[in-house]
Image 1 (cartoon, helix red, strand yellow):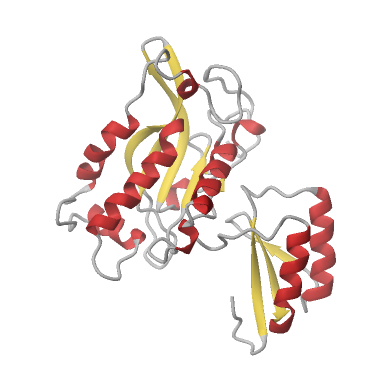
Image 2 (cartoon, helix red, strand yellow):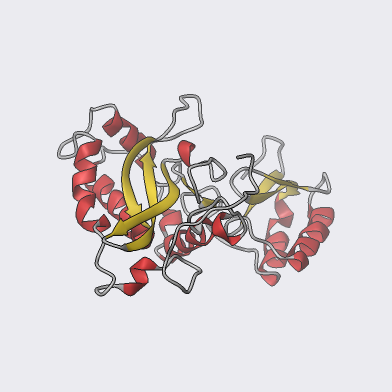
Length: 268
């Protein structure tokens, strides 16, 4: 991204749910000293790394160095840069593995090259492993917080989805929309994008379309959030454990899902 100072740019480095190894951090420190005029990096709420004050002629060299250490990832500052809290990987309050789900969504989006879609660039996906706000799900275009669902006696990992959250000049919390089983989160997001593409006005982006629907001025077919919920019902319907055993297993886990919380690491 070009800085207002002529000849300088800021380089944004995408991480998977904020993950970076010790050796990569040491390499980033060396790169900061070599390429950033301020000699340091910055981190933000979207789990990325920012090099500021990089000379434009050094951008190609910086990219080559990032490529060497596996950090030249695409998708920065796009919907493909998914935010996910630590989830059950380390937090005892978490009910789902939001950390791993964020990685799965990001990988799928990059595979489909959705990071190159200008209709999605200003939108965000944020995921929390429980109703607390560590993943910032309330201010996401599409937000999720973890919980558990049950079909008969069998439990499965589940997320509550909100739409339309934002933290810009017109800040608002996302509207709770529906519950989405973990293994249906990616199909649900893709279905919402599909609906948006068929309904959007010329030049409209996903974020503004969702907020237009929330305000009740949608169309031609999707008049309100309830219309989106109806179209999502076949996507989020749970199968029986006999039909799809993997549906009842959270990402990153081997056994059947069960809800259990303990002493957490966050402010709650």
